[in-house]
Each structure stands twice: as structure tokens, then as C-alpha cells.
Image 1 (cartoon, rainbow, N blue to C red):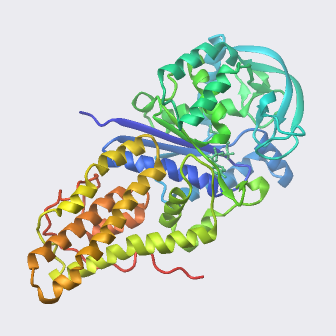
Image 2 (image 1 turned 60 degrees about the vertical axis):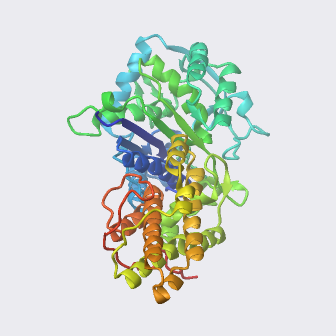
Image 3 (image 1 turned 120 degrees about the horizontal axis):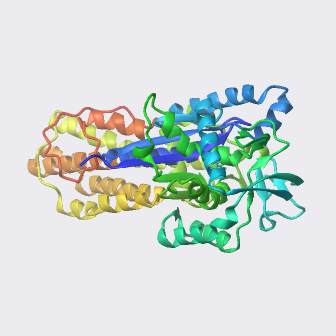
Length: 502
Ligand code: ME8
């Protein structure tokens, strides 16, 4: 059988400012799932990139006295550089100022127009220049403010083209009926469904005042509202990501769009409708996560409370950052993060629970068995606690339950630590009264370490690679306890998570 194709995306980020930890979070989440699917043998395509048109960029560039393209070039380079530093394994990085994207957008939007889903009209309402979003009445905060950016909204009255979203109400309702897991978690799906059932209005497709945007293919006096250009990246990228190859048939529809709740409406309502209007299949699924908060507030550049991911990594390393965020903040919910919380988890969980376990086990195999893993039977009590975990792990990741899946692995790591305490291999080794039991204990510990480390590959890619190489494990597929017979040579490791400087 050919491998199952699996296409995952992140939002494409605005280049009006530099990347912060919130952006890194979404990209790392998509990366965990991409790596997990590669471990399952899927043919994965993982896309991320930058959203470079529209008012947020135009305004920010004007403030600096540079061209929007110059600002886009500068910040896109920073977003692109962030990937490798946080262990992200994307297959392509799309920039919407790429002429190949622009040409495809024109082609698809012309199709939407030709299919009769566009009409001219007058827009009157509130607009947030930071979200680049026309707010419906329900979305306007007290004092006509944007609930996300906490700025006063602009009142806009303009003649422009509309995408006839209202005509897709029935089709969208049917789509959600048919696909109960189109949006996860459930409470986000319910939000999308109630937004649709509340009645859909047509949405602005163009803006006469915008300069930094793509011209409408059928009316060059107007520029495209950035969201249409942006959403289409998920489709256009497949047509040029590989020179001379069109990947659309292989990967579309996307298997998963990852994002935070701020852009739910665009993805869960407008995007499937736009796909239908363009004659494209809608995406299969999207997962909506919460916000990383500093104190009580969303981390965002405009609120000025951001943690710089480059600085965090400098201190703790990329794996520790990935681990901390998925462990600390229940994926799907909002959650506060702090340096103190980071230090505590680093120390207690990464350095002690996992790092020490690895060092101890490898040191004991070295000392008591000259570095050769004994061949022995699986311990019955340990086997009971490992039983069924791989299946549960896969199920959780199928639902993008990143925190629960990690908790499952951590329960095994803790179980292995208890196994060390219970069996006390150093006592067994003292007079070698029962060498077979010592063999068995050491074998089970190495197996446990191997099995849990394979599960940690998506979360701690660099650390897991290091440890798996020391464990002489070449395969990256998930494995059951006892599936390797022993007999391999292993080495000691220096601390995987060394003490951090204050
Ligand atoms: O909305 N916590 O771009 P954007 C968690 N260009 N995630 C966060 C976050 C936080 N504090 N801050 C940002 C746009 N994010 C559009 C998207 S897609 C076709 C176009 C992440 O730069 C999260 O994924 O404002 C959020 O949805 C995204 O960055 C918004 O990025």
C-alpha cells in the first residue's frame, strides 16, 4: 500500500512585527503532529509561512518609513529563521508576496467570480486594522473596541466587492452535520456552528483604499482583502513548493489546519465556503488552540508583553521550550506561562524525571553489564502498566490532544522511576545473588526508556535523537515494551538537561 498522505499547516503569520512565542507555539504544535505522523509512516507535508499583504503591514511599514515589501522581507526572514531554532521540520515556507502565489490567487479568485459568488455592494461597519477584520455587531467590544487588540475600531463606509458568504449557510450547516470533527475541540466546533446558525452576512472581498494588496483580477481599481489572499496559501503552496511538480492531488484537501481561536471564524466559516465557491474540496479538519498568556493577558506585540522565543531557547534549549509549553498549557485552552514555571518543570520533570532516569539506567548497564543490554523477559507488572498505551497515545494525537498525549508518556516515565526504586538494582548487584533478576530489571529499564523516548520524538526531537542513538535504536516507529530482545551495546550519557544558570 502507498503511504497515507498527511498535510498539516500553521497560520501564515503577519510580518508587521517580529515572531514571538505565540507564533512559535502554533508552529511547534503542528510540528509535533507532523513528526508523529512521519513516525507512523505517513507521507507528510508540513507547511508554514508568512502573510505579507494588507493593512497591518502597510501601516507598520509607513510608521518606519520603509516600503511594505522591505518590512515583509526583514520580518519574513526572522519567521523563517525561527523554524530551525525551535526544531521545526516544515517541508516548505510560503510567502504570500511570492509571485507564484499571487498568480494562483488571481486564477482561483477569478474562478470564484466566474462561478457567480461575487457581487458589488456598500460596506458600512466596524473594522480592526490590526486584525484586518470587519467586525460583526456581536464581535464589537465596549466603546467600539477590538476585543483582541483593545484598540478603538475604525468606522468604515465603502463601495466594494463582496463574497456571497450568506449563500453558503445551508451548505456549511450540512458540512458540519456530515463531519462532526471538522473543528476540534468540540467547544470550538460549537462556536463555529452557532456563528453559522446565527445568520451569515456577505463579506468584503476588496478594499478601494488599500494599496498593499493584490489587484482583483476582474477590477483593477480595487485590491483584495488580505484574508482571501491569505487563506488560499494552503492551496497555492502545493502548486509550487516543489519545482516542476504539482502536489495538489497528493495532499489536498489538507488533513489539519492548526491555529489559535482568534482566527476561528476565517477558517471554520469563510474558508470552507471559499473552497466550495472555487470548486475545491474543503479541508478535512482544524484544531483550535488557546492563547499563551503572560499574567492574565494574551501575549501579543501590540500589548508589549511578549517572550522572545530566541532568548528562551538560548537559555533552556528548544526541546525544553516545546516540552514546557505543551505540558504547562492544556492544549486547546488558554494558559499562563512564566519563567518561574519554566524553571520548575525543567528541573523537576526534564532534568529529574527523565534526564536522571536515562543517566542512571545507562550508567547501571555500563557498570553491571559492561554496556551490553541483557537479554531477558518482560516484567509482568511493568508490562501491565505499558499495556495499551501506544494505542491510546495514537488516539489522543489523532484528536490533537497534545497535552494529554504527553501526560500519558510522562506517567510511563514516572512508572519507570518507581520501578528503579522498587527493584533497587544496586542492591541486586551487590553480591549478584540473583543475576537473572538484575538482567531482567536492566533489560526492562532499557526497554522502557526506548519505548518512552520513541514516543517523545515529536516533543523532544533533539534529545530523543541523542538518546536513541546511545540506545543503538535506528528505527523511529513507535514500539511496544519487549519488542526488542536486548543484546545491543549502549553507552553512558552526559546529563540530557544540565543545570541552568540563574
Ligand atoms: O492572524 N498564543 O496572523 P498573526 C497562542 N495572518 N498563539 C498565538 C498567540 C498567543 N498569544 N499569538 C499569536 C494572522 N498566536 C493571519 C493568519 S492564516 C491564513 C492568516 C498564533 O500573525 C496563533 O496561531 O496575527 C494565531 O492564530 C496566529 O499566531 C495569529 O498570527
